[in-house]
Image 1 (cartoon, one colour):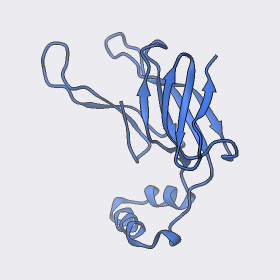
Image 2: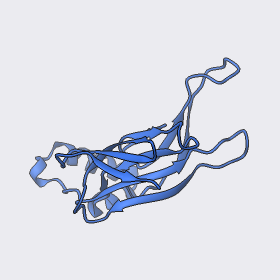
Image 3: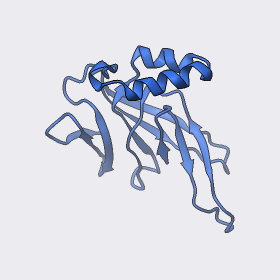
Image 4: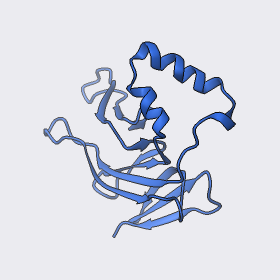
Length: 152
């Protein structure tokens, strides 16, 4: 399971059970924010969790809605301007719980729940999430603690 800057989740397989070469397949897209660390749990029926460190700034939404001949140079410009001029991410903390689906059984991937701290008051910029014994442990770039969220 991998997350990308384009707000999508892809399932990556190294090789199929029959020995053939694996590959990557998009299973979910159009998340409301950028994604970071993703993990799957063997303890909770194979559910997966993905960190959503920030929402998408309006300027970035506008740039990505433009035709590629215009959006690519603008994205390049955003990469080279000083950080003090670039759009600041909103204070936000989020984790999405998802079922990765099962193509063989015809079960589609889907988001089950989203846990949010919409204004980032308690925990923000979540970049890593790990599930253990019914709790999510949340790593952050901005907090000096590990957040804990009970799933029960």
